[in-house]
Length: 329
Image 1 (cartoon, rainbow, N blue to C red):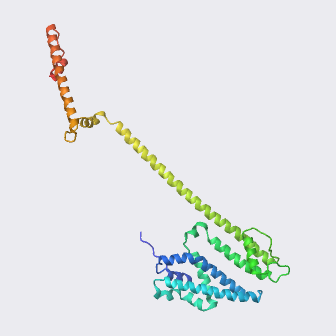
Image 2 (tube, helix red, strand yellow; image 1 turned 180 degrees about the vertical axis):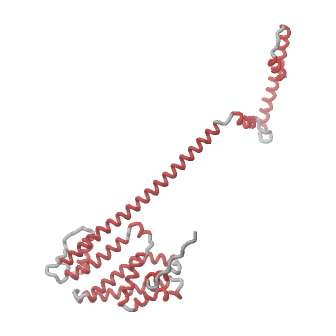
Image 3 (spheres, rainbow, N blue to C red; image 1 turned 135 degrees about the horizontal axis):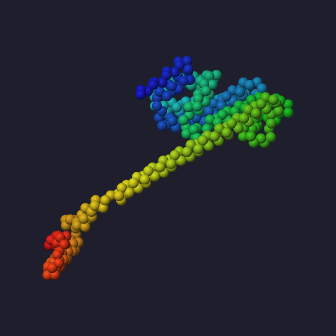
């Protein structure tokens, strides 16, 4: 059956075309290792860049957060630039590097387009083939991190200027978000606005869903492993049983063979060839053969005496006795 060729990607589907262009060249082991190691750091850097954008442009935050946002934006730009340089160094096809990565290079040069870097970092997680992603469902961890970081910043936006609020800094807001997502609930920081409490409910549901997803992933992993081991053990036992029955039938067949079929082997074993028998054993066999010849002659003499006595007494000798006597002679 001939393999069907993959359908061509739509020309307007920019992201699919971008990754198809990336996958055109096979990656080296160094590139695969760097991709696995840089997935989470680049995702975290993308999230920090989004936070810096909120710190810089949201009017509700103080000028202190605007300065912090500019500083974080520069740091994340440096991280993205270093990542691009490392990928260029590891790429064996440097001549086509700009052609395959021109959107990322433009995003590095123009700050408003750095959202492309964020999108690529998120899509890189979706394409991650690391075994850890399949084992413990680390996608839930990324989702929790996203909800905590941005739930904290939105809660801070709603709470920072509210009367009676105790969440007035981003550090306190992040601490409250982590306590909420783990359903610990220390109670040292609590939102007082309706919007803040709505975000708290969202964070609580996200935490419960993440814990359930990780637990289900680990449990399914163990269940699949146990079922595979059970099937392997059942296959081994069935093969052993079939082998035992085959051996039993073979032994039964051997035991049901007539005794005459084994006599030639016994005769051959009891009268080995002189060429393969040691001299001492050969002399013993020859002595036994001479003794048997003497006994045969003595038996023949006794039979003759019995026949003479029968003639003198006038007793007829049975034909089978005469036959045996003739055979003995």
